[in-house]
Amino acid sequence: MATLDEIKPVVNDKREIFGWAMYDWANSAFSTTVGTVFLGPYVASLARSAAEVAGTSTVSFLGIPVAPDSFLPYCISFSVGMQVLFLPILGAIADFSNLRKQMMRLFAMIGAVSTILMFFLTGGFWWLGGVLFIIANLAFGAAIVFYNAYLPDIASEEERDRVSSYGWAMGYLGGGILLALNLAFFLFSDKIGVPGDLAVRINLASAGIWWLGFSFITWARLRARRASRALPPNENYATIGFKQLRQTLGEINHFPETLKFLLAYFLYNDGIQTVIAVSSTFAAAPLIQGGLELDQQTLIAVILMVQFVAYFGARLWGYMATHWMKAKQSVVLSLVIWLGVVIYIYAGLKVENGVI
Image (cartoon, rainbow, N blue to C red; front, side, top):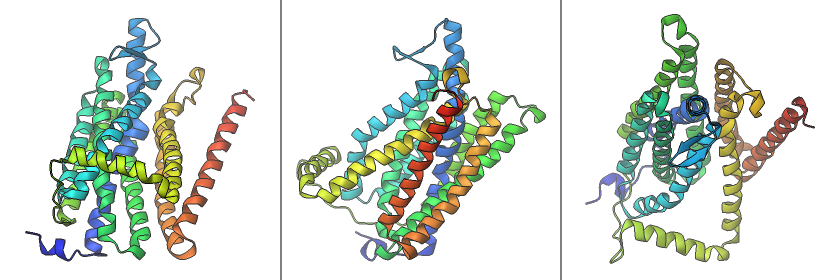
């Protein structure tokens, strides 16, 4: 029997919206501390050492020779490919069941525990960093499916831009605060007798603890929504999920605006995620390999500054979408600025290195 909340769902409840946004606060620690700052350079350095011991310029992962600095980007690509196969099933679960909250919690726990296990990345176990990252990133994306699906249920149409930007802002703030704590710990680790590699591993594990711990606020405040819908005869979540995907692709020509949106989103989101994913590895890579060779302290400080600037940016863009311009205009303006900055950085780096 459906609960009262499922029959008459509550919208614009500040307590529930705060709980929903706290999940972004929680899981953004994975994006900042693990995905953007510590894991890439650390795993690359371990893989580089393994290659030197073997007397080669590459390392072998599942029998495939991989350049040490390219190892994590390959893992990112693999995990994204797995999401393409996996997420349609989760979409069906979100549509045909009331397991949204439970599934979100399950994948959050899998991702957080996988991140905590990164504490054990040492020496010859460099490859474990890739395996754990693939699992954690897949779980991260899976939980986000259910997290995003909650937005229309907790916020009315006129409030969704504001609530969405609030969630993004909370994510930047939460990820930035943990990164600041990790920066302080990393900078002073030698003074308290903690070796640098151990400090990195502690920071990686802290992201999983942060992710799991703050998620409990979300579980406590987020209501279950939508009673179960009966699956069609002889169907399961996997088959109905891919049938829905196939049907959508088959009918997409009848919805040209939707097609343009999906293509545009695929292009700009993939570009943004690529820059975020490889930025720390590129910044830390030696100059001889085309990197910037920034020390860890400078790298963390720069990304930390970006996090807190992004917090105010997310709040500003949410306000702009509500009061000054439409959401579409806000997105276009932000992308134009983003594109200009990336092109300027690319041209500037090429000039500085004497290439052009």
